Amino acid sequence: MSYQDSAQKAEENRTSAYTLLIVGIIGLAADILVFAGVIPIYQNAGITRYLVCGVMGALFVLFIIFGIVSMKSFKILSVKAESESNLVREMTKWCEENLSAKLIDEGLFETDDIAEEQKYFKRTDKMRNIIQDKFMNLGEDFLDHFIDDYYQNLF
Image (cartoon, rainbow, N blue to C red):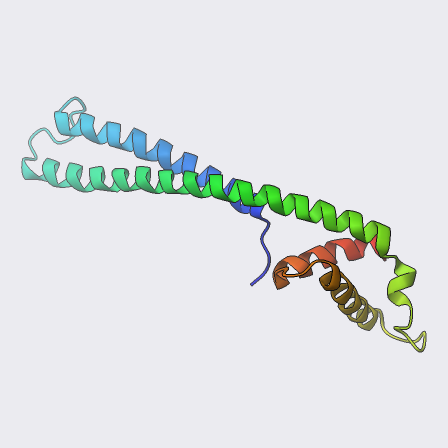
């Protein structure tokens, strides 16, 4: 499973919530108008109008419920995204002050004929160990994502 930013998850939940709420409210209003006979779709249909309007009404109510749930998730994830953003800023600041390319490469390579891919894996392992010593209890996916981003700044 790859890491997904909490801010991105929050934005996806917000978009989903608005979409579900808008579709649910408009659909439920249209369903009520059809059922009441204001929109004459089922003039001589008898029981079909009750069945279709009942099923569609239930579906649109579910859309509204899921929209409300998504909005609550958005609020929770936006708080988490803010704290995650603060952690990333703190980690970046610490890395800028304490990690350098020279420090990371120090003692890693005995020869210069090592492939760039092998250098990458050795460097990221060392970065992971150094960062984990300072910032404990970080999720593996979060840490891998941070190291991949910060690695681009150093090398």
